[in-house]
Length: 242
Image 1 (cartoon, rainbow, N blue to C red):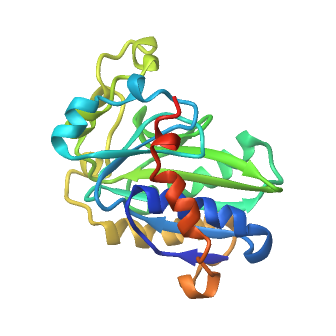
Image 2: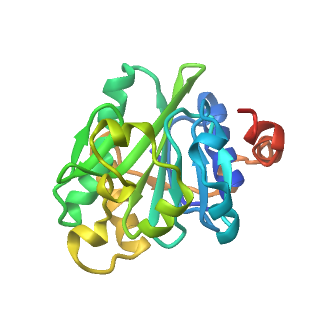
């Protein structure tokens, strides 16, 4: 299975994930691992900006946001504390079955690092009942795109500053995001590097998907069409549609 290791800013990352979905009938399944540089916020396709982001705090910290093509909630992507994954596969399973299969890649990644993670339906991975990874999905032309996070060293103080507490926190009897989430560094009690998580992720996702991941480059895929998609993700019309 094709493996792509290309990172960029928020708009580029979302555009490349969408392009890989568009190209899937031609190039087949792809797994991509990347980071957000600089740090950014992504919000779900159906979310309202005013209900998800503390715009004043995000502005103070110089943290921008982009709307995803996938659903789900708002996510703070820490450049120095998160590995992001995306997987494009034929959509042969139900939504729940596909979430479970792909999120098992995250579970196996973390277990290789010594963290006893578990899949929590419908789209989370948890450690000791705290979220360490969330995922979102969309489907098109017989293929699915699922992308999500692996928080290894995310600055939870910044996360709490820039994200407005989701309603489901109160429903769970929690008062802050910090009560709901954790990171690999917190669980292991030591520093963790992007490269450590990446090497574990390549092995973990290979096992979960049942195929060896073979690294490829942008030239082999043909990314000429990305600029038009990227322009949409940079537009006010797209990001402020709700």
